[in-house]
Image (cartoon, rainbow, N blue to C red; front, top):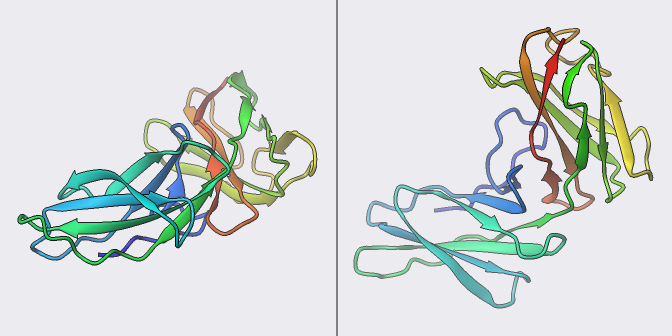
Length: 204
């Protein structure tokens, strides 16, 4: 039974400890306990060697937990324990941490626009690096996934033109197709960042 470390920010399949788009949430995942495991207990603290509070008890086969973070900007630490049907606890798992930062907002465009739009958003963190994810809504297929340095570093208003790095799967977006996009902010510490809400876009 082990907590799963977060994967690289540009991985197509996201797993392990990470921010998620839906609210101020940190998601943790873990590998299965042994065959006697019936429940998992999730613990959270604000220091690696401080006091940890039990957040929830989950019944197998659930192997993830999405934590509603009380205060974004604070680093939270997590470990889990397994329990058997007699209530005997395992040793604690390893400990992982994550610091959720303020999400990008004001994502634009929304609604019809040209086939090579300019994506704009606001970032109060004044971050240096971002990741844009753009996918087809009907299939979930990723059209463009790119990590890039801020072209407007130090300003709240940020932007990037579609396929600026020539790594998208298509040179321009297709009319009549519904897409959605989001901006992930890469924190300046390990295991820190945020993921904006998904925003729809349809090309005329």
